[in-house]
Figure (spheres, rainbow, N blue to C red):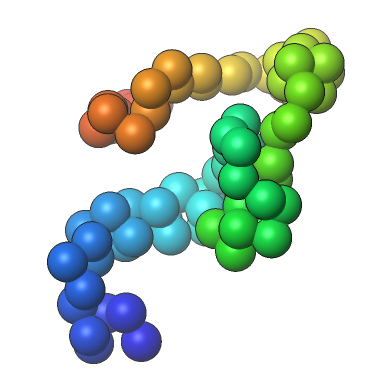
Length: 75
């Protein structure tokens, strides 16, 4: 549907949807859980939740100010 309409933020929406299909996404923000769920991500509301994810993960990528960054990862 978005692909046909091509809104102004299409490139960003396309990249986010690709990331959501290929990885688990977590968002630390002041947004409601409904908004974050709508982005196919999980909300992090406390530092302890973030630390638990870090402790139990094989690898972690933390992007401070991610809204200002474009990241391309190569394995």
